[in-house]
Image (tube, rainbow, N blue to C red; front, side, top):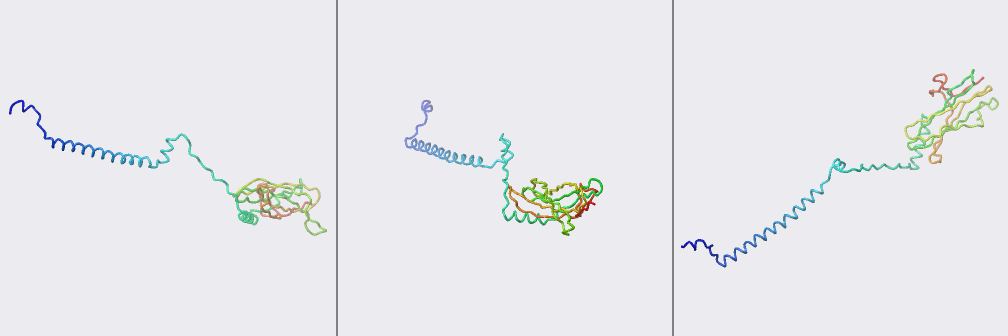
Length: 219
């Protein structure tokens, strides 16, 4: 073989060349198909990764806005709940009336005080005080014409409202007191109960200390 023959590239038969071209096309098509399969898979993997929930701490760190806090709306009591609440309050031991002062010698004053509980929901509490004077002719206590209203504040569950007043009398009298306790809501009377003054309820304003009686006689 001459040197010129060695420098020439080997001749490829036409049939073999066609087979090689077809093989190259099949390889290219397989590559395109493989890329087409991998692209949706990568896209789906990215979508799944983006759909993962972010922890609240990370979300708050990337957000300049404070989290929204929704306040619960107050629920109004039903008529049945109102009746039960007023009945419990009206029969409670925390409803009472007493005389905290019975000054016989100096200023001839009588101190009257009462206490009532709030309801499980906001309501206005009112005390109406009536002084009763003993009538020897009728042999019983008769109410005086004037009444005094105490309290009127709005309170809710767990609160005990206590209020009172001091009255001065000139002549010799024997007195007791009756307090009507009333619960209001939205200007409507929910219920009421009454108590006559009784002993056993000393208060911080009792005079002398821990004084508490049901009736007072001023001679």
